[in-house]
Length: 485
Image (cartoon, rainbow, N blue to C red; front, side):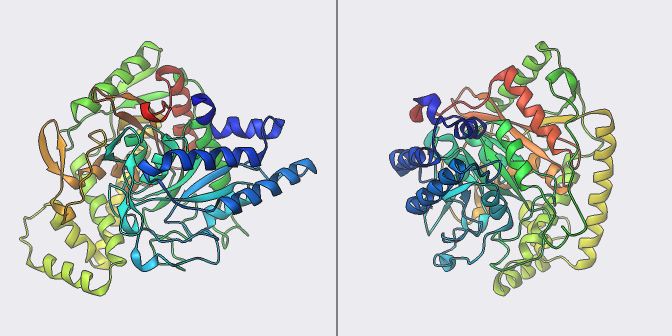
């Protein structure tokens, strides 16, 4: 029964096409699973089983007529509560939006529905997707299925927990500060941060409901229990924005290889600027050793960038994006703080205050610095196909809802470090618009999952996903949490 609950979306779709299971039975199976296990996890926070069953009947009837609704025909799934989806509240964890019910679907949600998916419900996140833990005053706290005393990550923590506990076979997450990748790492599932701009984020909150402008750094992307499922979802989701579609099409390059031996692999597993806890480092090192034994072409190499400098560019860009959405009193407070800072204060809090209130002139200077970094990455990927690196420095950490958020700490090898170091390793890809796939590669000595981040060349998303799929043959893939088999 464990294997049955945790089948991949690709396998479920094959069963639907063959008639081995009906969409109604598949939806009911997942509704029953949510009813059985969601209580202690609190991943799925808004559910409409009646509507899902009605759409499943329509899917079964269409299949009986010989109609094909698309590559996801009849597949149930959930989506992160930051997305607008008709029939559900779209709160983004904010009490002021608890009654907001959108009249249109987010573009990414619509693409999934147009491909035949059945959205059963929404999954939890931190308020306005702004934390590395998923809790809010609307729906409460999401617990990690591997250890309920720990968080599932953020901001797509509900998404990752739902997948890990077998409540959905596919999820739609979002990522600007590792929000797909750190929950995937913490919960032992797969997540893909796509190249910036290839999947529409219209209908994602934040920005505000009804916003049309694209937000720098922010992406929508799939989360799943297999790399093949990520590839399937990417094909559905990746498309030009509606107003560009009349002139533009999107044709992502094929993967640079199929099997592990086809790829030129660079490895960068630690850095003095963002040291990695030994629990994580040991698993990543074992993974590289397994790749070496499998005959992989591996080099210890990294782009000609300084991690500290790269991170500071990213952090200020990110702060600028966030500052643009703050209400006036919050923005003015940060402007006052920035005005009182010592010139040599380069702390995380100082960078955020300066970045959130920066001038347009400064933003343009930063963008040029980012473009220089992008050129260095492009040159690096002339010689290598993928870079393997950490996702986050630790495994899932105990719930910490203390305030202010800036006062929290990340414990690495017994040292208390800045909470916002969560975004250092993921930020390299985000700032430079690169695709990055996280794949589960084992459990640490503490029994918690570890994910490997696979970074690839801009617009070559198929390469990082295919590498993750090939990696399954070397180190295995998704493993169910012990208490949710």
